Length: 429
Image 1 (spheres, rainbow, N blue to C red):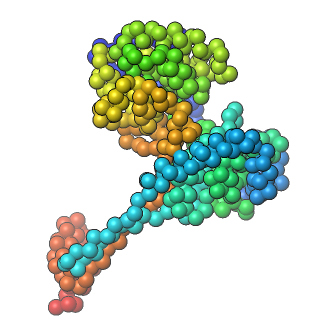
Image 2: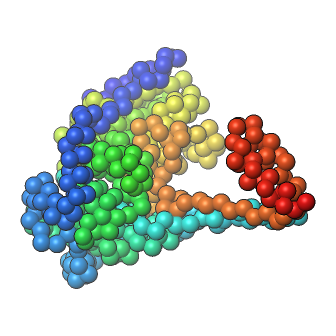
Image 3: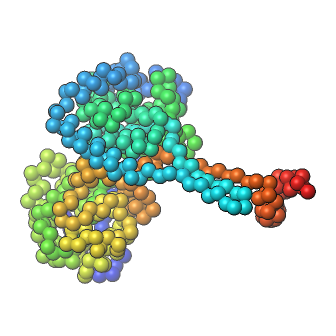
């Protein structure tokens, strides 16, 4: 049963439990896989796919015909739903696209910034106990909007060597045709270093298990590829007054708990009555869940109901926790929003469950976890772009700035830097 704890000024981290991913060291195993794939290419990737996924493949790539056939096999109603979701995701992320700027001054100086899409990215879509077509849409569509030239989707095959139809259908809806049947550290190696049939990419985004995460970190540390923020267990914090239906809150908490035994679900409220009602309602709803064993472990070990003296204090606790998902279940959530600084995504009001953000609304569902919402952001168009600056000086502008530039360089002991300016200004005399 979920615990109810009362906040009375004690350190916030004593009020709740945020489970962490397993910390066992798989570095040596992963490094061996990376080195093998880097040296032996497709042969090694195919070998590891058979070893870890049980699939004996003759090719790592998915054909256009496979994509088309899979699309036709998916329930048309689900195709319609995913198409609608894709449209919402595209509409939202199109507003994120930024343009560069130019600052042309009267003194002969021109400064500017360019926003450039990455040339190639890989989207890692995990397999295992569940498949996530929603993650395919959430990763692919912002990359397309950013203008990335080559987008590769990597996902592990089933034992029969096929990628699940629903993943291929989501890829087609998002406009992705470059798909490889690879998972685990071998997928990261192929994408970071390239093989005979998989060209290397500039960045890899998407969550994975400890082997995928370690592989991404090792490759990034060596400058082979850029990676996104490392994802931890999923989490939700519901901040509510007494007026919310406790069944709503219990359903939202369980929606997060069914992800993983390490997932965390928290309720922060100023109502003792609501706290007790939600505690009881969780026990009513839990037995009916398909993933009830997972949800039970998550709720019992990581779930908390935190009683606060008022909702302003609740906002302070939410900012300290910096949850991945934050629900503001109050009558006027827009009045409360300015008090919130740290959250991956904020769900406003009593009629906006976190499920909408996972699948349909449009904002990205790949969010900062483990408290890094203090400084990190959701996946978006910016993650598939880079900034580049440029400078232009006329001769007169250099003469005007030269002495300052030389003085600064000399203060740091860089005489060659100073000379690069001086040799030009002397020539103009």
